[in-house]
Length: 198
Image (cartoon, rainbow, N blue to C red; front, side, top):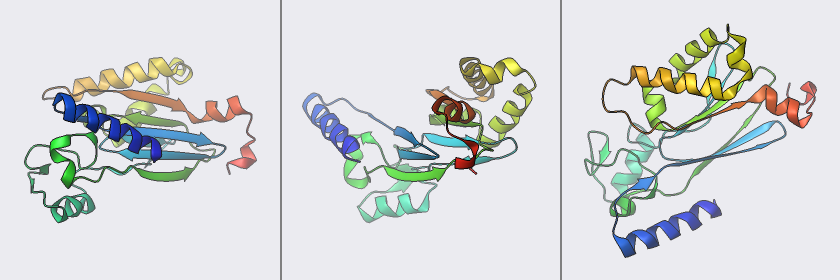
């Protein structure tokens, strides 16, 4: 929380001095033994994939989220077509100085217990998830699983996911940033026993 506030203070100081526009979402994770902690602000998402299902570890901070809409309107903002003042799609961000008085700039921090069924944790920006939603991502990875080279090489898997997401974007492509983490690899690397995560 403190790190986010420090970065926000520095960014706002720069924006006030040099007057550029814009802002950024932020998504951080911390893995400790059999728990993963997610600190999120904006519309990037962390999703945990098992063999046949997925679990969202973050909340979307946009105006399809009723709580985010209420916060903005309570602070004097207007939401039009799910955009703040008809312009900004996210309800939390670092920067975006012109909208700051209507926005909650604190990250949401959630924790999740990992299990032996978990396979991959994927962190992605909205550009990626808009091209390959969680359900489609799960199905695509199930197909790739037939080719063992993808499961052993995370870069190969990440590249394949980005390529598939790009195919599905019909309008202008947004930034696609992706991190793929092998949960099984994490436990093997750190020597955790399976009975710790049951």
